Amino acid sequence: MSDIVGSSFNTTLSHIAEVSDRESLDTVMKELAAGYGLSSAAYFGIGLSGRSKGDPFLAVTYSSDWVEHYKERRFLEIDPVIQTGFRRLLPLDWDGFARSDERVKSLFGEASEFGLGRRGLSIPVHGRHGDRGLFSISCDHADRDWARDKLHYLRDFQVLATHIHDKALRLEGHWPQEKHLSPREFECLQWIAEGKTAWECATILGLSQHTVRCYLESARHKLNAASNTHAVSIAHRAGLLLPLM
Image (cartoon, rainbow, N blue to C red; front, top):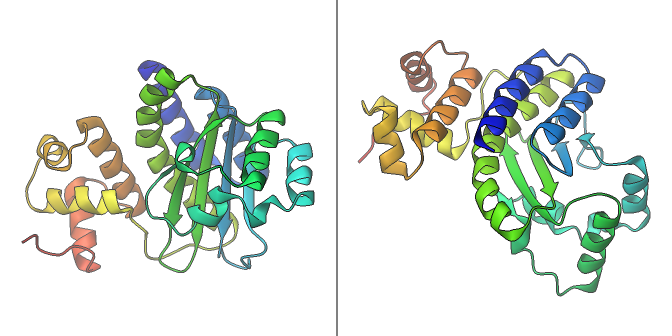
């Protein structure tokens, strides 16, 4: 699993960077889902340049039948993924949603009939200009497999989500001057600024070295930095980093 996931992560990052139009982004989403063995992958963006909250940017692998059915049933009004996801900062595990509400139970049940998985994760992305994104994946893994694979997914998709969101901004004609770093990217960069190594960052934050390196790589990409030291310098000049007490 780890070798396959690692290959999919690097391949997906490269393909996202090469995206030049909406059609090619849709293709990347399909490749991502296939590479990670997922039932579906979806990106929703709101507050992007030239778009209102009622007109989201979508890049999904869902069937057109499910999209139409979702609209007809007005599931948007009660979908806990959408209603909760855009307000959250941290990833959401769909297992945490209470499904006592009959309409919510119907939503997840019918989604499964249209090919979406029973398990899912949603990764929020918050920009500095009111733009927000929500990257969601679903699968049908068994309990034991999900507990294991979810850790790999969380590691990779928090990085991939920010890259997909940045690409959506660019496709909408918005080239932000300031880059939005995730809370984890801030933390890793902050400790690097304090002279810590990636290994020490991992120990302090309770993460793996690989995960810390992924966050640092993503931070460098967002800041157009050639190295961690360069990224720290850019972040300092922008007033993003504060002394640790």
